[in-house]
Length: 242
Image (tube, rainbow, N blue to C red):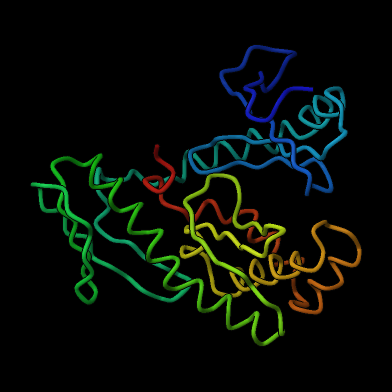
């Protein structure tokens, strides 16, 4: 079986410029194809699934993968070197970004303005990603902890990261990691992610008991889970750079 992150030919039966990444996940319950921002394809594989099943799954899904990659690429807006605006759907906030060429400085919030000092666009985007993690922790952690208190669940620690493949995770020590990009999603979807990770504090698996607990926390979890899987389309390209 190919190791996680291995680049494979998308279609072995004919030449193709496309490639996909295989990621083996202990949490996955089934083979899943995901198309991320920019058209990057990822195949999530449960442990124990052999390469033949993966190839067969990709072949069966090839039509959907090609259509989705094409749609993602054709609908992706052409982004400027530094975004002019950052919008957080989670908390209905918008920031007009003002890039001031010069020495690198930590982005500063001035009401609805975000001022970033940087000698070049690449540095400005890097500073914005750092700011995004801080902004996410300040906005997401209180909401998560409020839900945990409501459900009488104890969270040891909350961290925010810029990740490409996970919206959240929970450690055996009670630390919940949140993807800073959750800020770009709707509040009900983010709340479902919170419920999902809080349920892992009691069940570190995806057993029936785990999903029953998730349903007790969020009855509409199936629909919200589907929306979450497609949520990468809402994340600006500059967040994934680097």
